[in-house]
Image (cartoon, rainbow, N blue to C red; front, side, top):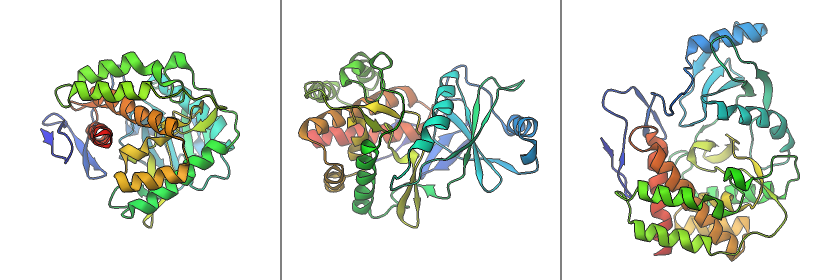
Length: 326
């Protein structure tokens, strides 16, 4: 089944697989990763009742999410639970707990950790309890004024980069967002091959090589979110309200936080976003490269039913980069 967009076709969930809607797109409820933990309502209920008996009377419900690292459940009216699907997600749970409270003074809300859960008899990872943030999934419908959104998000990115907080540094060995772009060269070129049936591989390689040729970042390490796409933004009353899912939080080159310029905005709104952030020309080139690399790797992995929401979003971003370069 193909999702028709004005950019590129992406394969949706296989026929018969349970689905739900996020941001107007179909999301498969099946497993997205090999060796993923089985997480259901009964498991979550037992973890809460065993470890936090004061909350045992609160209702629990699953939250529709296009996220890839955690299963999300609401606990009562005021809390949300985040349970890693894979072992690699446990590191984010611990980083969130220590780092997110340091991000004071930002112009948009960020998650507030409340408690840490332990592994249980049927679940192997640490998990998190955060304060619930009221809001709607960010989309063209919930944020109709894209120019205002661009300014709000640009100011957030600029303020975040100015903060001083004790967060992990982006490690080149991990190909982390904020490390030198060249660290992702092999992975990005492999992804180009993986989507060559959807896009012109020659054009993609040309765009990637242009980004690699940009001057490297030589300033002090700056804070960055690293994953500013539709799925990690919340809206309220028509305005951008919160930034969630800080799994890529790091110190390093802030260029990855220019990703929204090509993932979320058309050319006019992109200009407003970049004006609000204030990058130099080299940072824009690197930022476009980050937007392209993340989208290519994401599409190559999440296509064919793993996560149709992210697959479609990545395809749109790839086309936006190509259009921007003409």
